[in-house]
Length: 113
Length: 341
Image 1 (tube, rainbow over the protein chains, first blue to last red):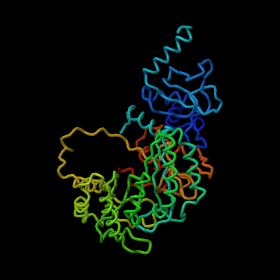
Image 2 (image 1 turned 90 degrees about the horizontal axis):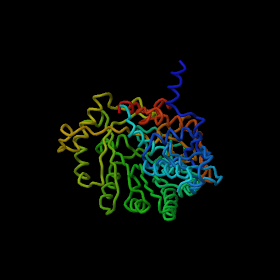
Image 3 (image 1 turned 180 degrees about the horizontal axis):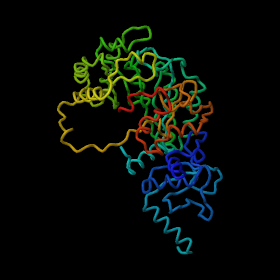
Image 4 (image 1 turned 180 degrees about the vertical axis):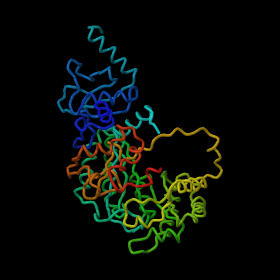
């Protein structure tokens, strides 16, 4: 019974996960949903969503946080994560760029160049 | 029909992206026609100036991040409020000039009564490239259904105006929508030939044949609509008449079926009513489910997310019917033909 309920909910938007801002933009409040949507278009560029609060940005570089696991970049409108406008853009990038970003991130973490 | 992942990804990209915005604007909800099958009540007249300012402010706010702006002019009869269209479109032209990444396209659904050549040329100049104009059959049958508010006939003037469009040397697209029902069915082959003969050689004109639908108007019960599979077969038969030399359908491989996604199922599409109310669907205009928000004079949209998400449920469920006509299941007056289609 529990499983059935879970399956049904998967087919509907969770009303706590999304909203529309005062400019009529679709806003995703739940980073996990953003990740899932990004995964759905994995490898395709062109989907630009807005995330109302920063996804987990702790420990990520200040500019163009690369989230290689989901193959996307999260920035604010100005392409910078340390602005406090709270208006975040999730931009899906091509797999090549994503892999390159991942490598660069790994090199940074390892202290390499 | 099951939607595959690739197709779904395409649908998600176009339906959720905040780089696209589709506004279906009703510059007036008044109409000079009283088509017998119409579902609108014409209670609201011209768009209020505060709403026009609201649209312009909204577009100013969104322009820096937008890549694609689609304006669909609807009514009522939108050309009764040509000045409202001009006001907004001139503003859009300024925004496009200021934001080179922004691309704008406008289309209009008009009865063409006021679409004289000067008006047409003015609209082209403002970026209105696509025109949907309806006929209900040849003159004697059209003039029984598609009548002016005072009962006067309309066929001759519409035909003249559409013919005059051909002479304009510019890129545009005219969809000549032809409604078929049991009353005009027999006369349709000849009328389609007449349309083909007049406009068929001009690729800017497209003839679109479909059955008359019951969309919630007061005369719905009396409308002699085509029904069932026989009706659908008849429409297909008439459509084949448009391309008699096209024998490819049987021999060529099947065309991949891409689900038709209604604008109302998209997150980035809104109907702007003349009084500033925001809806999703242009049919069940006053249904409670279709009241999803309000546009304020400063351009701010106050949207009820829960209602919007109901319209967008097909994007989550992947159900083609919910994508094709999300009104089904939300509003009682959903077009019965939607399911059959």
